[in-house]
Amino acid sequence: MANRKTAGMILSRTRRNQIYLPYLRKKKYFEAITTGNVEAIAVLSQKNYEYPTALFNRCGSYSEAMNKMYYEAVCAASEMCLIAIQAGLLDMVAYDIRDEFIKEFDNAVSLPDIYDLVHGMAHSYAVKMQYVIREKSHSPRVVKMMTYIEEHLTDKIELAQIAEHVNVSRTYASAVFKEEMGITISEFITHERILEAKRLLRDTDLTSAAIADKLAFCSQSYFTKTFMEHEGMTPVEYRKNTI
Image 1: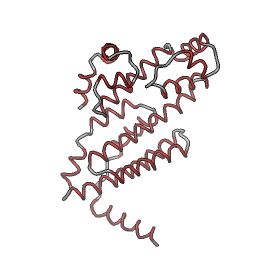
Image 2: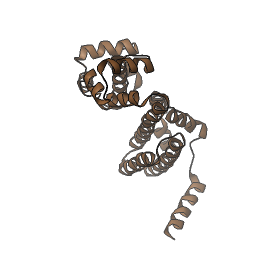
Image 3: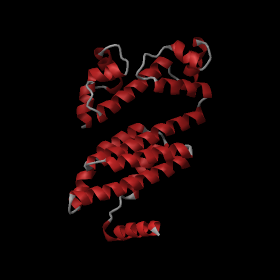
């Protein structure tokens, strides 16, 4: 009876005044998730950052806007979960991400909080999908090496550690990685650290010095130099362009 009552309330509310996000807008997020494109998720987050304000302007009160935003967020959680499962993500992994973020939605105190959480959820699904895609296109050893690197970006990573992790020699680890990936292990480590640095610049208030230290760059100046080589701008400039 309680479930029927809840369903009825939702249906009544939907018929009364719920405004849905168009499917074509959602489709871009779904495509980014299924392809593991975390950069596309970041771009979409920046592109649609005015959505909470637009939603509030359509509502009679902040409380009403929060209720609608929460409703949309929970719907998005279910939709992204199913999209990820259909693309090959393990059911329980997808469900865990969904449930974790719905709990966070419950604790959100503002429209921007919920907005950021939804994009954080999309980012989490995209990251997990990267592993699924890699397992389909790379050997288990190379996948294991990439996973080890991504899980230790905040540490000083040595080739010997990676080779030991997959039970091969350093020479073999370097050769098989370069053959499959087309880049060296060192280049891959730098690439992944720059990706994480960009996320931290977008989503946190950490200074460039703090990010350089967190991602195990030898110095802030080296971090800035490396970032410029990859992105064509300094970390400070990148942050200004994504605000």
